Length: 132
Image 1 (cartoon, rainbow, N blue to C red):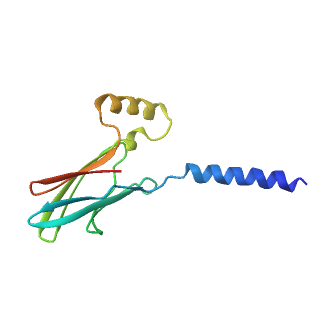
Image 2 (cartoon, helix red, strand yellow; image 1 turned 45 degrees about the vertical axis):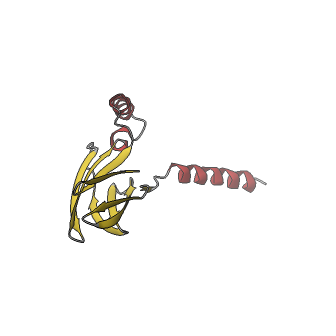
Image 3 (tube, rainbow, N blue to C red; image 1 turned 120 degrees about the vertical axis):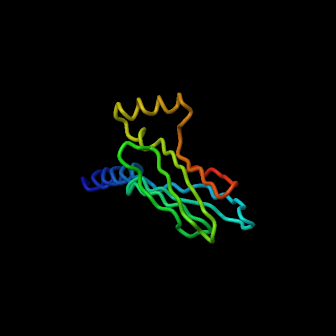
């Protein structure tokens, strides 16, 4: 009879751990036209590995990681003879967690209108923002 409450408690702990696990963030796909070609932009950010991957037409073209306590990242690549530049700002780098530093950073970012995670991608004169 004691095994049933122990099993229930184990299931609750496992469910809580799964709920707290970091999940990969996927950007909403966008399409831009540059140099007479259409490009489908996308990307993923894995908070656990601290790895950002930006894709063009499904191909991983730009990859990088954020330095400690630095929410900005700039990436460049050439794909099908078109130059791409990405300027990324990930507010969750600073505001993650419940520490005092995270709470203060979150409040400051909110006041500056810089909350959220996004990458501004340009190709020639075309530009689009990917939100994660």
